[in-house]
Length: 233
Image 1 (tube, rainbow, N blue to C red):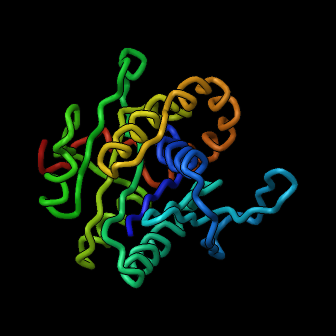
Image 2 (image 1 turned 120 degrees about the horizontal axis):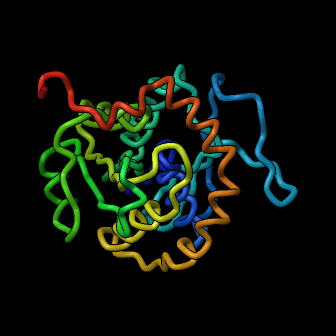
């Protein structure tokens, strides 16, 4: 089993990519994640009440999709529990999908993919694709950083896949690059053209989620992913 985690953060890259895969590949909704620290709201889709954080299944792929950013106080316990759950289920790999803030994003026709694994061997495996770079120095903040760290401690293979992205508004183009990359490494067929063609519509539809996510990211210093740790300065 491979787990794809798509919690909202930079550019909503992970959220857009995971949701797109769920929709296009016909994943089945099989569960949800709940926590007292999540906001007291419900999600409604086509007159149906939906859980805020849903778990989907398709063959050996599990996708976690969230309609809300994770509150800072919930990040550590939720990240730890997700890794525990992955271990209980015998997951082979956890892949966190995310964006990497790029100040010159408008100048990039094709955002670059960066990867970092919980073990050097995982990074090596994921970096074999053309046009993929290793995330060598910096910070990984938020729940994605917690999941990667806890997986390393638990001896579970995990990695984060990042695409160069706008920082504080939705970036379907970067999400499309992540989907294309996943289609190659997971050997799945998925057409990203509809995602790219609906980019402007998605930006408008997701701007409120991006606003809430931006507020949450300020609490976990997501912008520091552009910086180097002090030891490297």
